[in-house]
Image (tube, rainbow, N blue to C red; front, side, top):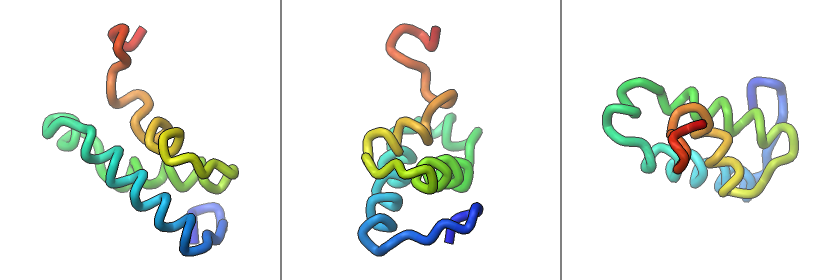
Length: 74
């Protein structure tokens, strides 16, 4: 169950896990030292509780404000 009480079916749980693993793997070791997997997971769970199921969007939600964008984060 997610922090807000949402319950996810097994297929969704698999999508969430893969999205978390994907997001974590995209962080550098320095970034991993500055943010926890739990923080990424909380962001993904919150988005999923609001209905998001697209793995790329879930990954993006997890990484926003952590990984600079191609234009330098501006």
